[in-house]
Structures are given as C-alpha cells and as structure tokens.
Image 1 (tube, rainbow, N blue to C red):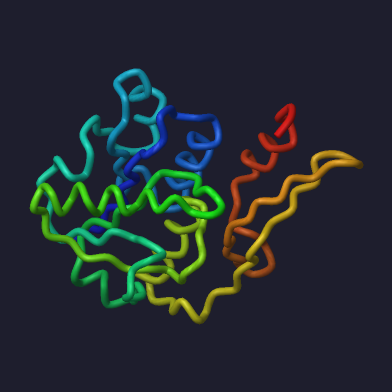
Image 2 (cartoon, helix red, strand yellow):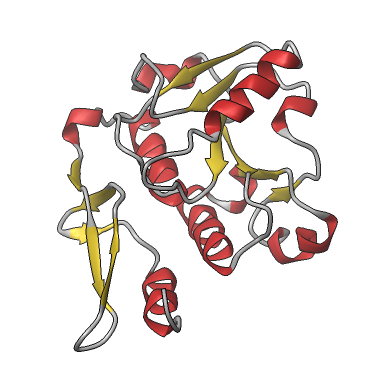
Length: 193
C-alpha cells in the first residue's frame, strides 16, 4: 500500500511561509507521495511542481484508510500504522499560540461527510507542518517517538538587536534542526513582526 501524505491547506491564503513549508515537505516525502487539498485555483500552479494539487477538502475526496494527525489524539503514531492507513492527513496551518485547534474543524468535516478515519498524535506539543510530516515519515519507517530529540522553542536571530521566537516543537536530526533554511532566511528578511 503506497502511503500518501496530505496537507489540508487551512489558511485563507497561500502565504509565503506556507509555500516555503510545503516546498520543504515535498523534499521530505517526495512529490509523488504528497497531495495538497483545499487549494484555491489561483494557487494551483505554484504548488504543482511539489505534489498533486486538489481544490477539494479531504472531507470531499471519498478516501479510505485515513489517519489525521492531531496533537489532541489519545493514540500515538506507531510504525505498524503504516499497515493500517494509506493517507496521513496534516493541517496546513501555522498554529497559533495558544492553539486554535483548527485540525478539530477538519475532523468535524470528516465526521459530517461520514468518512471513516482515525487520529494519531506525534506528541502533545504543536509542530510546524513540515516538522510533523518529517516526524511521521520517520515513525512510519521504523523510528519510535521516544527516539526523537526535540527543541521546544526556536529563537532566530534577525540582527544584532532583534530575534524572533518560534514557540513550536522542532525535531533535531543528528545535531541539526529540521527547519527549512528558506524559512529562516524569510524570517530574517521580513520587516516587522
């Protein structure tokens, strides 16, 4: 069973940081394994070279064997889940702090559409979408959640006097943070926060 990773785009626009994260996700899982759902027509061309693009929500796609990743799920994702699910769905949102629980809206839509699915967590802390996809992929390939090293807050120096703090959980691979370098550059170049 070929595993697909689905990003349910949940922001009102395809913001620059979203696009950077989505590009990073494509590098992590490969274009052929990635589906973007709930994408507006005007943004379709921008994302087509990174994965399959769909205008509909996951709740309208009639898929089977779905696992929705949510930090609020009672069950943790395990390697043998790769045998139970074909689609792993992530909310394409940069969470707010505190979280607005927008993945709950997706879960509600799936229930309303009478689509069978289960949920899993990758720990209880909020991760950026690309980091969540990275962690899920590694778990499905054989890693345990307890094998990961995480940094629970990231401070990026913008200049000598300023820095930006990202209050989310980031995976550490070896001694390198899993974050898109393009995102770091984008945060440094942004004017005002």
